[in-house]
Amino acid sequence: MLCLGLYFIMNLGLTLYNKAVLNNFRFPWLVTTFHTSSAAVGCWVIMLVAPSQLKLSHVGSREQLILAAFSVLFTINIAISNVSLAMVSVPFHQIVRSTTPVATVLIYRYLGRSYGNMTYISLIPIIAGVGLSTYGDYYATVLGASLTFLGVFLAALKTVATNKLLTGSLKLPALELLFRMCPLAAVQSLLWATATGEVSRFLTFTAQGKLTTGLIFALLGNGFLAFLLNVTSFQTNKLAGALTLSVCGNVKQVLTVVLGIVLWDLVVGPMNALGMVVALGGAAWYSKVELDSKRATARC
Image (cartoon, rainbow, N blue to C red; front, side, top):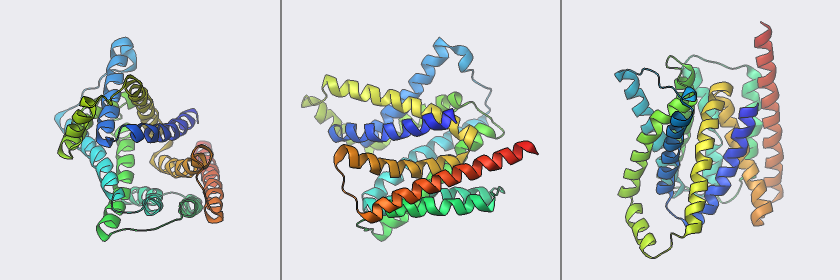
């Protein structure tokens, strides 16, 4: 529960922090590069300062290929999300992304794992609530809608793949998985930033003197929080499971809207307010169902 609470708080905090940073530093791929680089550096520092906390396992060539493929999935997941968001309205993007728990369940069923009926039913108000809370101007091109649904599948696949790497045959510790994956993802993100013209625009941005000391410190704090979030995210995925992590993502969307009302005077209608209540109630129900299920399993 502690890991889940920390993950939730840090996830919400980083979302708001990213929004603030990207308002003044409009280079999302370079921010992603910085996040993954920060995680790699953070793991390296831990390995030097507290080597007992991060010991590298023996990984064969097959496992190295799996980790490389996972880093590609990590990068493509971000790319598809960014590209699709440019082709659809934000409300459409959010309501489609709210179906990620369903995609997670379907992937697990394909892999031979099933959940109790109450778990499936408890997902309905969560998804419906997010849909209502983000209700607005729905717009999407055919390609944009297709990429958004593909992004849902990739997000669910990434979460399930992370869980398998942490709990499957490899059983890598969260820090080691980060240490092995993040340098690869950082290089891929930097290549993507170069291909999309972000690097050249960043050089112009720097030459114009816009990279101030305050912005540098803001980026350093952002990278440090991203490192902490990655550690807690992987550890929470290992302990709580991929589906619970997907549900947390939905609840975070609702609370982001709530904080938007408080911090940025965001105006919402009765339908949106009802959606928030329904989604949060559904999340509480899901938590109870999962807790009861684990208690029943422990008794057996």
